[in-house]
Length: 160
Image 1 (cartoon, rainbow, N blue to C red):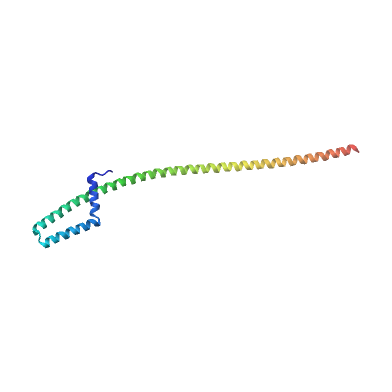
Image 2: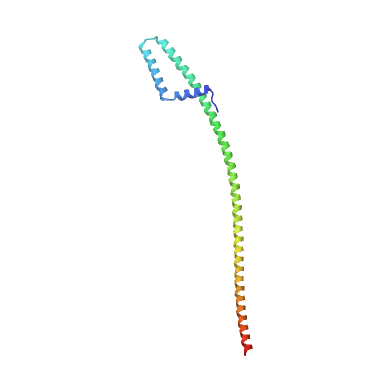
């Protein structure tokens, strides 16, 4: 939120009032006032009147500046509170999205497991088919061997 010139001045003033330089300046002014009172250079009543008036005016303005700063800080805190609420809503939405993504990941995992099982079944079937083919080849080879022997036996029997 942009600050007006008065707000900037009030913030700068309250910041300066709380500084070591301000404490030093006020200490020097109070010391000078006490020295003026003790030295009797000026009439006591006039010095006290001017001093009290200046200190009272300063206190009034400081109270106003401080209240303006407090109000500004309260607005800033409210703005931050609003931002925090918005962030919490965003975090809630993000959490919902993460939950949905997790569900999708779980579904994908189940699909991958199903596909893996199907592949394993197919692999087992292929292995069984291969074993059957190997057995068939062996049986065929055995039959061919037996046929050759029979042919040889028939040929020997014919030659006799």
